[in-house]
Amino acid sequence: MDNNQIKNIIAKRVAKEFQNGFVVNLGIGLPTLVANYVPEEVEVILQSENGFVGMGPLAEAGKEIKDLVNAGAMPVTLVPGAAFFDSATSFAIIRGGHVDVTVLGALQVDEKGNLANWMVPGSMVPGMGGAMDLVVGAKKVIVAMTHTAKGAKKILKQCDLPLTAKEQVNLIITEMGVIEVVNRRLILREINPHFTLEEVQALTDAELIICEDLKAMEV
Amino acid sequence: MTKIKTLEEVLTHIQDDMSIMIGGFLGTGTPEYIIDGLVDKGVKNLTIIGNDSGFENSGIGKLITNKLVKKLITSHIGTNPETGRQMNQGEMEVDLVPQGTLAERIRSAGAGLGGFLTPTGIGTLVEEGKEKITIGDKEYLLELPLKADVALLKGTKVDVKGNIYYDKAARNFNPLMAMAAELVIVEAEEIVEAGEIDPDHVMTPGIFVDIIVKEVK
Image 1 (cartoon, chains in turn purple, blue):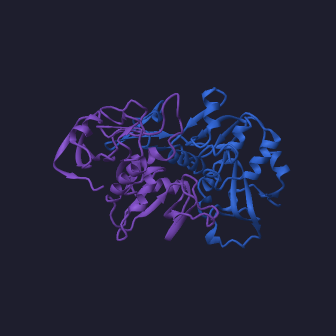
Image 2 (tube, rainbow over the protein chains, first blue to last red):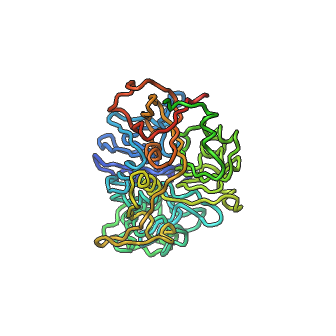
Image 3 (spheres, rainbow over the protein chains, first blue to last red):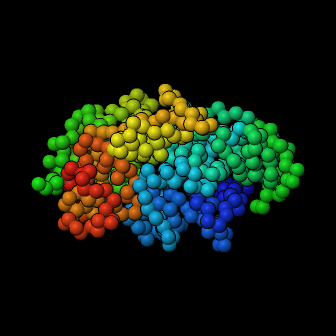
């Protein structure tokens, strides 16, 4: 699998978590791809933390609209029913539990549901942006990421990078499977049929508990 | 008395060592014309408060590239490598604040509040040095208000009374900063007569605004 295939497998699987009417915030990068896989019969309302709900797909080249960009400054479109607001309202939506699902990438995540995705001391300090508020405030937190980073494990017993939030992650979706965080344990619910259980565990630092009802991940 | 001033008049109000809030989100809703004026004037040792540090040649990034900033209070610096460089070299102090906390701290200052309790940052580096308060069975951080000497805003349409309408995603931090500074200056894309903005569509009431300057591209 090349990197592009991996990302799309993950994005496609994340989209299945959405239900009709959900308010969803998608992080920059891989999570943005999830929007491409939302089934037509499921209507989700995308929230953009720079100040609106009802975000549509990226704007086509030449059709950009002034002052209409996503939180990564990419020109986007709106869907009918969109609404704009200021940053305090935007984060009242986020912190106040009005976002059903937030999808973010991660540098590390651990079996307690801790998430690290905002800095690597000494080398990369982009800042947390809205991530700390999103992870604390959203009803469901989905980490969508490649299972490893250049061979290094990312699903750990204990994160060693500075945390974005403590014990807030609910679901981890990678190209190898779907892992739920339950009571500080990681339950493997689905596995990509291209991998064996041993292969998945070998690339996971934390212990995976195999769900009795383990399913094949649709890829 | 008119609130409309020239850029030259605006710049006489901004001195070295001041704290300045600047509206915008990665350059959308950012008063670039005033920022260019600050760069030309060369005011130094500024404390800048804004959502992000923009890009190297746009938004707040221009102040950083020109080394006019002593301290930056912001939520995100990842789009401007020069910010990280100056931070790592110890040339500029950077205080990273979660975006929602930054917005609410500014709103609190403008709303006369002594602070607020947020669950954001619990169990992270953000909680260092802050008071933790438990309400019910949930822990919160006490976050304090954040105000500035000057706020620089960008309005899409501004009437001569200072009432502001922002288009689309240009609103972001602007209405919050309008309430949280001693001197509030708005850069207007378009200045209109009083009454030309429907009062129902005013997003920042003109009573918050001291000075209006027409953007010149």
